[in-house]
Length: 262
Image (tube, rainbow, N blue to C red):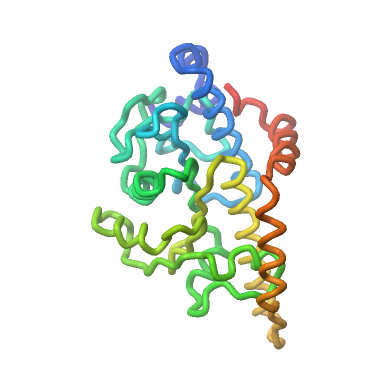
């Protein structure tokens, strides 16, 4: 089956009831939430064609992960089209027959394997993210969105396209216990305890990068936040769970692209 034929069938076509009937209720709910996340990432313009992944563990099957089939755009992903793989990227269930971008999964598989507390991993190649990833100083403490990440974001040096399995160890070490990672000259990554929180992390990180690029382009002296103010913002953010935001985003998804739940 080609990506074009899958899309022509509405993302999953006749596969939808078959997939829903053969997975647990918990897995189906996760599939719907993950497909929604793909659509929202597309909605906010954080995509890079058919590349990158948003991965999420299968409930009750910690060694299995769901992610997008290789060839579909993010706004074509549905609950039924998601592929199930093990932590090495081996196919467990592929409703579309498209497979995955296994090289791209090296990053996700490494984090899921090393961090049992992480349920979802989101990686992007946005222009603002790439621009900040190319700057020596990294993310600057110059905006409220940036405050969330100051002193608790990792940096991973660029080693070329992530194809070598030995890079996994260095990547995981650079992430450490953080939930945020800037891959130098490459992009952004967030890892969280669930899909809503991981999306929220990326949404805020993307905003911080956009503000930084625009502020630097202004060519004027910058005002930096104090460590005390940064800590206050982090404490306030950490008290929230992001679920109210996710409910609002769900209304966007349900109105504009309801087929994600197929």
